[in-house]
Amino acid sequence: MNIKLTNGKKIITRPKEQYEANLQHFKMRGYAPVNDVKKEIKKATKDNISDKIVELKPKKKKNVKKTKKKN
Image (cartoon, rainbow, N blue to C red):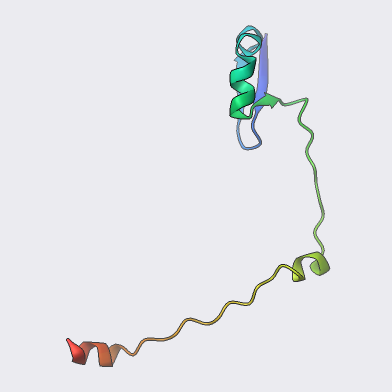
């Protein structure tokens, strides 16, 4: 019997005997059975996001003509 394991990004399938024999190895790598992992879905609102927005300064434009004359 195979068991599906996930680390949040990837899902792998391994025989159940192999998983039980190497349980510490899989936990160290961050893998857990898919049915044990519960997905948290969090809705974001504009009010929550607006606090975290940082305005970036516009990049300074270089004058190409001046740099060509210097060389």
